[in-house]
Image (tube, rainbow, N blue to C red; front, side):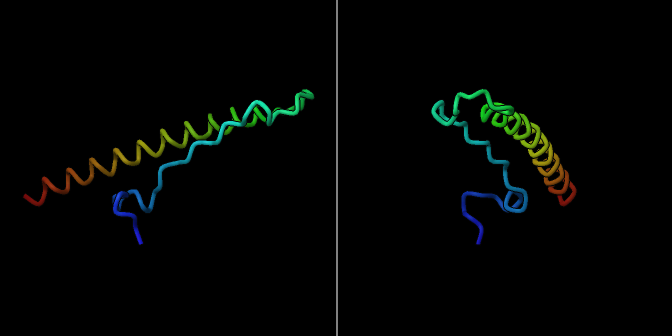
Length: 73
């Protein structure tokens, strides 16, 4: 069952979820390669790319709905 807060067009294409930033105490401080903060940065960059792609898909869907609504008039 779809949440009433989430439009149908988003239920089949959910918004990407941002990664959780590690706390300072999550780092062991031993100079790991990659460090947990390096991994977080990579995840954050991937999230940004996924979010941009998702926003583009949502814009396309909105444009398609608008065009479809104008055609039915």
